[in-house]
Image (cartoon, rainbow over all chains, first blue to last red; front, side, top):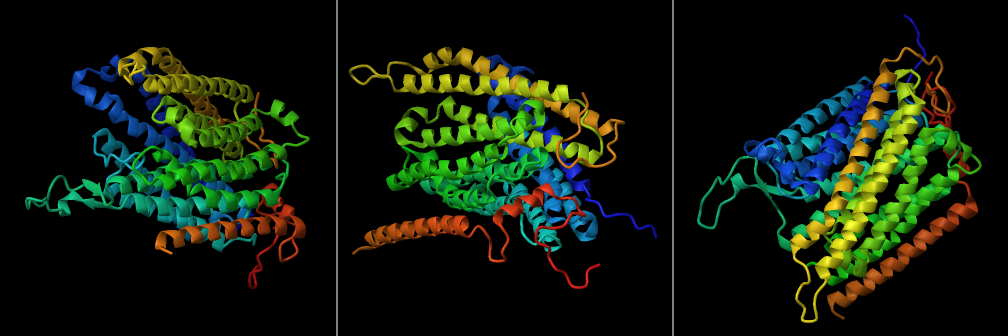
Length: 497
Length: 67
């Protein structure tokens, strides 16, 4: 029998790369439509009043957020895990038939989950809890998908050749454990068909419908413990895992301080879980809990900046690479945006600032400079680095990648600057009153003033989407290219002009 | 002392304890510089840099009778 040398097996990584790109396009396209719906409300009924149910803002909004969080980002996390995991543990998935089967099943059930989510949300079936809109049957399916992800992680760790777990693996494990805990507790719900009303009616409503097991303020507390930590364990922890592998690898530079990476890890794990209360400032939750949310949010700057500065210092003495490689540019700007939004978030969590910022567009701006600038840039950079190694082809075009970088950077800048101005204007107008305490403006006054900023935001989003389509094209052309790479490059990814 | 006061003291003590643990960990990392098995923490960066399936692990996991 032929004795071929052992190689890493990227079958499952490749599958998730595909969904990262496909769901990224879907999520961002819906986002752009929503942005223009806010600027030009007639777009809400663009396909006629008969179909308005499916095109209006409120029906599409959860599809946008969930497609970006659970579609694009989660696929990116899975794709990079099935790539990075093998490499830093020095074990191939081809060595275990079971793990390969689990990986493929993981992908297959994930696709089933995605279809169920898209269909149900478009049909208006929702629990109405933000970022937790899925009804109970889908929740159960998602738990199964997550357990399979866990088996993949710990299975691969179980057959590893490298005894120590690289820092990225720690972050992937934290992602798995964190989301598992949050998702289970926040989605505790009772199917209404099992309930009995006060007047004795049974089997109320559709079989798939459910209500939260928590009520009132408790529901809000659990919801924002979940909501905020979904940002922690979906948008921060796994993306830190990604940068800790891909930046050192692409640049050929060892992490500036591995000790700092360990320290930041434990700091982030401890502090993040307490910060969710800042979503409920000036609400009915106990005052001490609000204060605690604010304080922990401010402390959170330390571990976040610990990781981000560690990444920037990794480039010490090698800054010419930032100018030379658009791939490094993505990652350096990504970690800069990470620093930026982890400073902005704590500022917004301070009670006095929050008195203006709460419910305004500034919050939307904050989320987007984090997700577009940090999460999006890092996932795209990771896929660019993976592409030549997975497809064994040179990246199709370096200049296209550079063009994409600048188009998207401009998009992000337009997005967050317009939302800053819009948010603070909005906050100030809502608060303004005359000497007798009568409000100075009505709601429609704010809408009129904000219109230009909403239009600019739409343009910013459109630029980012355009860049993402260039990214998809570049990856596609890499996949089908005939410029094969014989030997894998140790560091800098090979790129065509 | 009622339960609220007790929990407040408990919370304070826990915070102090965790601060000591954190600073103790930092002190340990930066003075010892090596883990219990004598590996310099900074060597672990090589897990990402030398990640070919054939490259030598930083800390190989010894398996019974492999190869």
